[in-house]
Length: 386
Length: 145
Ligand SMILES: Cc1ncc(COP(=O)(O)O)c(C=O)c1O
Image (cartoon, rainbow over all chains, first blue to last red; front, side, top):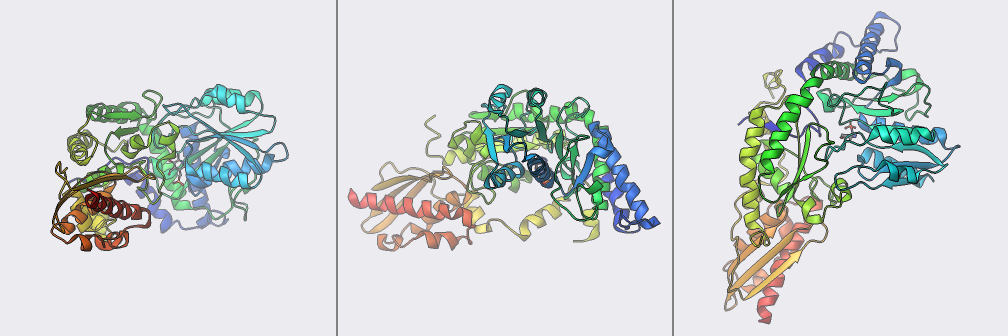
C-alpha cells in the first residue's frame, strides 16, 4: 500500500534536491557565517545566495529578508516588533478571528501588556470585509495583520484592498503568507504589505527555518537579541543548512509555480468535485478565492477524528478541525468563525495537496472515503431520519 | 532504521510508514478494533430502558437501549455519532455487560472505562464519561418502567 499524503498544509515532504543542497553544510562547509576565514565565508556566501533566491521568489530585495526559525517566529517578531516600536504612537492592533495561533496568541499576550486588539469577524466563506476593517481603525491603530490564505480553509483575503485602506491612514500591514509562498505568485513590488511571514517546510523545504519580509524603511524592535546577525534584526548563529534548504526550496518553488494553477489546482478540484458527490457534504471556505492546494469539507453525521483515523488505516493522511482531535478540546476556531454549527465542524476534514501528489492519490481518496463516511453514518442515531 | 530506508524518495516507504505508526500507537489495537468493528450497533424497539446523552463540549451523541431478563442484562444496542473512543467504549461496554447482573453493570464507572482499552489521553476522558453515563441512564430508565 503506497501511502497517500494529503496533509501538505501541515507540512510537505522535503524535495530530494533540497536535501542534497543541504547536506554539505552539515559536513565540509560547517563554518559559522559570521567568521571571516574561508570556512565562515563559504557559509556566508550560501546564506546570501539563499536570501537572493527567496527575494526573487517574492519580488523583494535581499536586504528586506530576515531569516528566522519558522513561520511562528516570523509572526511573533512582526506583531511584537511593530507593537513595541510604535507603542508611543498608539496601542491598537487589528487582526481577524481566523488567524493562525502564532498571531492570535501573540495578540492575546500583547493585550495583557495593555495593547488593545480588534479581532475582525469573517463572512461564511472566511472573507474579511475591508469596509468593516476601515470602521475599526482609530488614531491609535498602529498595525493591521491579516493572513494571506487561511491554513484550514484556504480562503484568500483581499489584501490589496486592505492595504489601500491601511496605507491611506499611514498604518502598517503584516500578512502571514506561510500558506501561499510557492503556491500563488507574490510580488512585493505590487503586493503592498509592509511585513510578511514565510516558512520553509510548507514548500518542500526543511522545518525550523522561515523568513520575515520587512519593507525597506519599516522599523521594528527585534524579538531575539544578541549578536549582530541578520543586520541586527534577529540574533543567533544562522541555521546555515536550514537556510540553504529554504533557499533551494524557494528556487524550486519559483520553477514549479506554474504547476500550482494547473496540476495542483486540477487535482484539488477533482478531489473536491468527486467528494461533494457524497450526499450531505459541504465545502468550507470560499469556492473561488482560495489557495489552489486546500479543500475543507464537512460530512454531515460523521466525526472528523474517526474519519481521519479510518483514512490513516488505509494509508491516507488528512487533518480535521473537529474538537479534541489534536490534544485540544476546542473545535476549530476558523470553522466556528464561519458561523458553522457544532455538528458541521464535528465532521470536517481538510485535504491539502502539493506538486508531489498524483492522479492516483486522488483516485485512492475518492475510492476509500465514501465507504468510510457511509459506515460511520450507519452508527449515527440521527442519520437514517434524513 | 537502515539508511536505505530513507533513500531519496520524497515520501517514506510504505513499510517505514507502517512501522512508524505501529511504534507509538495513539490508540491501542483493542480500542481501534472496537472502533473499526463495533459490536451491538442498532436499536431495540422492545427495550426495557433507553437513554440518549450528548457531550456539550465536542458534540458527541450516544444512544443506548437495554433489554433485561429478570436481574440480568439480556441485550444491549447502541448508536453513536462521536469520536473514536466514544464508539469503541460503547462497543466494549455493550459486549461486556451482555449477560451480566444489573448490580454488576452498575459498577462500570468512567474510571474503569478510561483504562480498559488502554489509557485514554487526557482530552478524551469525556468519552469514558459519556459511555458510563448513558449506560447507567438506560439502566435507570429500565428500573422506572
Ligand atoms: C498560516 C500559518 N502560519 C504560521 C504557521 C507556523 O509556521 P512554523 O511551523 O514554521 O512555525 C503555519 C504552520 O503551521 C501556518 O499554516
